[in-house]
Image (tube, rainbow, N blue to C red):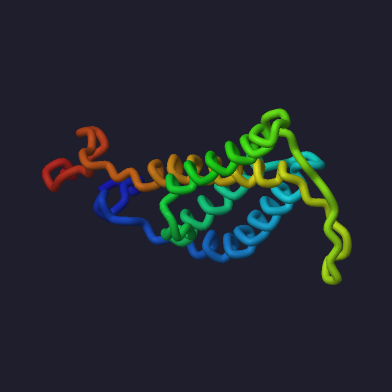
Amino acid sequence: MSPARSSRPAAAVPRPDPVLRTVSRAAFALIMLFALLLLWRGHNAPGGGFIAGLMMVGALTLHRMATGESAMRVGPLALVPIGAALSFLTGLVPYLLGRPFLKTDFGYITTALTGEFEWASAMLFDIGVFLVVIGAGMAITTALIDVRPTQLAPEDAAPGPQEDR
C-alpha cells in the first residue's frame, strides 16, 4: 500500500482532531457571542440578521467538524419557516394597522438592571432573517458534511493484494 493511501476503510468515520476540538471550544463560544452582538446591534449599526446568521452557521459548522456531533437540538430546516413567518409578521402587523408594510416602531425601556435601552420592531425582522439563514445554512452544511461515498471510482480504490506486487 502506498504511503499516501489510508489504511482505514472508506466508510469509516474519521476521529475529530484533538487540537481542533480544544481550540474550537473557545472559538465556538466567541463566534457565537460575536454573532449575537451583530444581531443585537444590527438594526442601528452594521450587522443584522443575515451576517449574524452566517457567523452562527460558521460556529455550528466548526463545532460539528471538531466534535463530530451537531450542536443543534432541532432539525435545521425547521427554523426556516419559523424565521420566514416571524419576518413576514413583522411587516404585516403595521400594514394591518394602516401603516406601510415593514414600518418599524421603536422606543426606550428603562430597567434597574440594564438602565435605558432602545427596542425596535426591526429586531424581530432581524431575528426572523437570522433563523432563516441558520436553518438554510446548516441544512446545506449538514448535507455536505454527511456525504458518504457509496462507490469509489476504480482509480480511487485501494490497490488489492495482486496490485501491490
